[in-house]
Amino acid sequence: MSLPESFPVELLAPPDPTRLPLPPAAPVAPGVRLVRGAVYAVPEGSRPLEMDLWLPTETPEPAPVVVFVHGGAWRTGLRDDLGPRFRHWRPGPFSRLVRAGFAVACPAYRLSGEVTHPGQLDDLSAALTWLHVRSAGLRLDCDRTVVWGESAGGHLAALLALTADDLPVRGCVTWYAPTDLARLPEDQGAYDATDPGTFEALLLGGALADLPEHARDASPVSRVSPGAPHFLVLHGTDDVIVPHAQAERLVSALHQAGADAELVSVRGGDHLWVGIADDEVERCFAASVDFAARCVG
Image 1 (cartoon, rainbow, N blue to C red):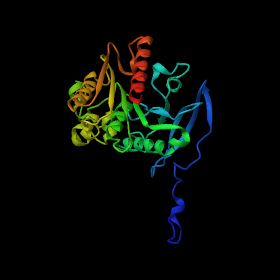
Image 2 (image 1 turned 120 degrees about the vertical axis):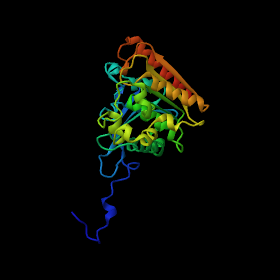
Image 3 (image 1 turned 135 degrees about the horizontal axis):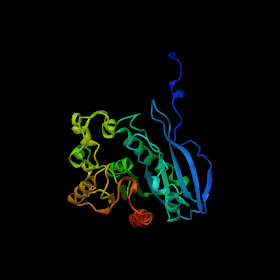
Image 4 (image 1 turned 90 degrees about the horizontal axis):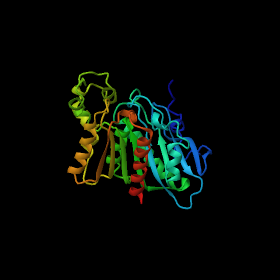
């Protein structure tokens, strides 16, 4: 297909997502309404990107925002899934966050089968921008934003928090997240840095051994600065997928830069909080909510 020179090509551009009407909100729990599938970006050559918004039913004042970034090894995942230990919660974790005084935004992002780094970070940065532009209509206080992610989503949340220079982020929560891709082979003895099929290699577009500078660029530890927001880093001591040493590396880098960071080592915890009791999972969630509240208070 080709276009004649006289055709107004601007008509082919997608509509501005900041001006699109929002999907209707539906009640999902007492005091909580859900706007599902709001388009926040339309990357060229890709699918439209959507986010879900969990909002308080009554908003006397604009609500602070938690932006949740889902995991899935950058390869898969659902934007509103906090992990298997939370799928049976009623009310769910995002409704609980709304009841704690937050609005929650769960953006989708392009996966590694669609785009390599930094495409995912670009998408999440666009999501932050969209929230700021739409904040008045949604009754959001985006100047009080905390980002929160688990596993690969924790990696992306940390990158977002450390690079969002023009958009205020008050705090960041990471759960069992890779933070130093370049040094992951040191921390996980069986890791093959020459393998182009690892999840990290698929994110980068090549094996870690072949792309050391790109791996560093994609590592939150390389983006730390004295002005970093507050960090809460939770990681299981028995994680067989992302070694606990990755959490230690991020917290150490933040401390060395003079930034505020707390490491919570969850004894006996494996990836996805496998191996710990339900009440310990509850404590991990509650500690994260309390931290977010302190950041925006």
